[in-house]
Image (cartoon, rainbow, N blue to C red; front, side, top):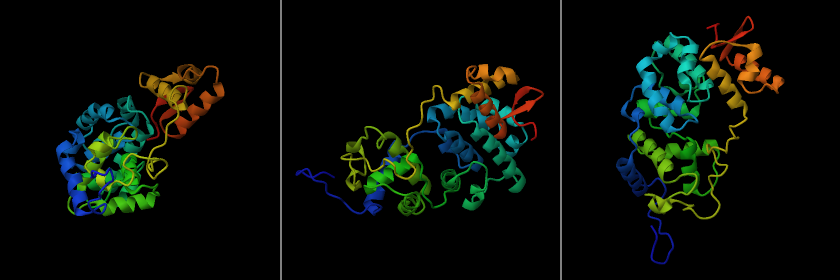
Length: 302
């Protein structure tokens, strides 16, 4: 809280009772209404977290509801061809996530009787599930007492402390800040605070409910730059391998593509070597199959 002299009067330690109350009061008042927040179903939570990886919330919302209508349980998804899921996934980007989710559904069905595990080590063994996603499932489905550190929360923690954090330190701090019995409310609140006020650019420090505890307060070099979990600037999409791969996968959702047509479909007719390499990469990832000179969506070996 700013005093009349212009200095900052800190009202207690970061993680202290007043700090926690201020953050939770704000979170309750300004919590965003997102569809995956109305459920504690572990499969629904897992699906939302996979979809939200590197994809904007507004692009996920409609797909999320439709996905659960089609495949409300891991068993439902495990019993369909990967190609069907890849066709559905169009528009969400990063199709490896779809492949990993399909494999995860199969493992949950075969190893855990169709129930998403709640143990951290078991979750981390599932395809494509990293430390963030595993802890998100633990908190938002099972309300286990742990912190969830994504790129936004990583930014918060670094700014609050005033220096760059290593991954282990960031997770330890996040765990320590969670108030007992309120892991769901707390972690969702931090997501909202980072998304709406403590944004990467032009943070609204004057409106922040915990500004008085923040070591940075919007002045000087941003300590979040290069800190644990904080995303780096992505390469341009236009002309990228991601764009070329996406063109081919999109075409394959409509039907087979011959190997001689692949470069043109990817708009790489003048870069045959690059086109061939991208096709090989997609095959190695199990996203497409070559059969008799024709490329097909999915892995026929499944």
